[in-house]
Amino acid sequence: MAKKATGPRASRKRGQHKPARPVKGAPRSYTLSNLHPRMPKRGFHNPFGFTYSVINLEELNVFPAGETVTPDLLRAHGFIRRAKDMIKVLGDGNLTSKLAIHAHAFSASAKEKITAAGGSFEILPQQRIFQS
Image (tube, rainbow, N blue to C red; front, side, top):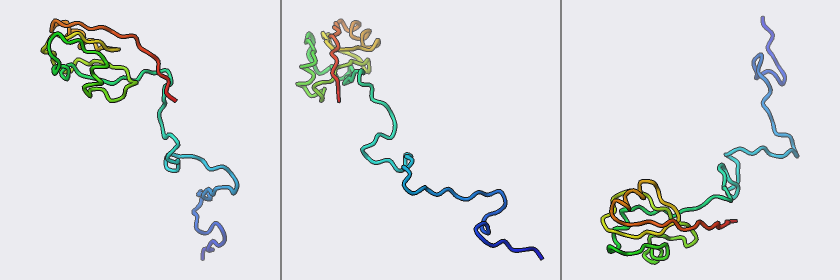
């Protein structure tokens, strides 16, 4: 008859190791499941990056022809919510009226569509706004 194993190894098969237990007083290891809500789970915030508020060309069709569209005018009409953000114009949609648009950045397709509609664009200087 085979001898039955007794003692601390009785429940484990040959080659299996004892399960790891945390050492008392040792620092906890952090995983995604046990991080606190104030700690970032992943990602990176570039302190030197720019933050843009984006507006599409199709949204600018509400302005009458010949109007000069500035960031202050866009904020007054409610297109831009955050006052500190710079403005980037994207080329989604078509521009139907001739406008002079002043913004901090333009996409290549937006520049083409603005000039095709007979309008003009001016790139404003980018200001650095450091966020803490």
